[in-house]
Length: 166
Image (tube, rainbow, N blue to C red):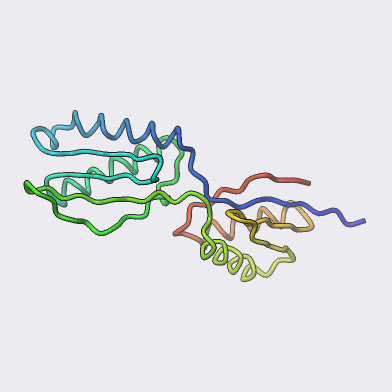
């Protein structure tokens, strides 16, 4: 009898931790010396899944983005879930940038993960299930080797490996 093990690969965001990180970034921007007397706003819209950063110039906007990514990292939220759009200029010498928050694997991202798993050349099967990729193998070691391979070769997608079953 052959025993199989499985796991799910997903790209999910812990919304409570994300919101806490945004609040911390806003507070830090309000108290930092280099932002004193200037515009530095972090707006979070949970329903539409985006964060909008506003600052006086591009340098301060970049610093604000760095603060946000640092706070996300400190709260164990992968900052690769932020997909930045083009920087736009607003009135009163202000620039802003909108970051959409990707939660769940899109079809293209799921195909990319399955393609990487096939490149791994282990005897494991991967199938796309809505916003997850289900991986089935013969041993736990194969799955752990697959995780290591994906962490090294998939840099642009925030992946979590969950639901291990023996």
